[in-house]
Image (cartoon, rainbow, N blue to C red; front, side):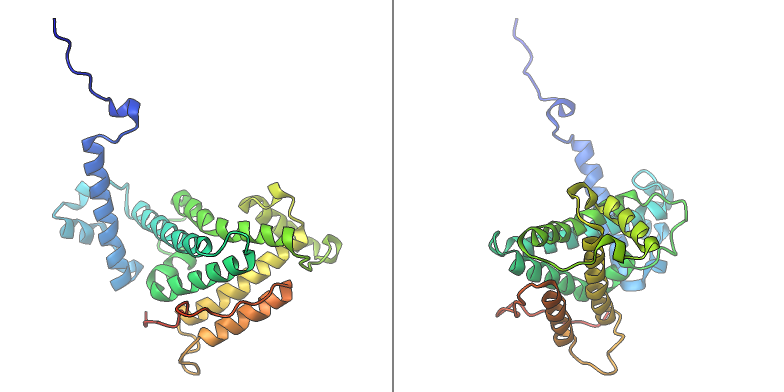
Length: 263
């Protein structure tokens, strides 16, 4: 008797079934439309009804793919963090692996370049979560944000190994601040690598400095006095690197990021 042909079971091979692929494609389209509405109209302009109308579906029909508006906003925020993480990781990988200094410069410039090219997305990713229900599950966005930060954490750890970076001793730091810094180190995984609390303070201070100047550019806070924010960003970057004992690496040809569009 002829045996029936052996077919692969998607559940055992790990290959998505046709139904799963169709579902994933539909979910991707839903998120793509929601992100476009966010960019064009802000967070308040994103609604299940509007997305469903453009999809040719009913609003209740969207609940087969997302549990509600909060879940949809969290999902697209996670996607945006993953996109930013990829941009930063690609910039890091574009430099020779042993050259930690150059890798860090390129990664930070990639952060700025992505932010000024995507001001609406940046404001949602790093701004207040006022639209979301306080009890909304934001775990996917937090996990994606951690993936974004992992490149910078890894580079900072390499700098600590390669350079004599000055940082305060633990007893020199206010006790209340130490508590917060230890919590930060635990959350992002620095504690696992025994990063001193003083080093965590340096890392936090550097992030505040970089993030601050990027925010000022993205939200156009200095447009009334500056047409081009890149020189200020580079000045802050140079001062920050010098304070870390790291050699500043000027912008290379073709690496400039001043191609800004108003958000």
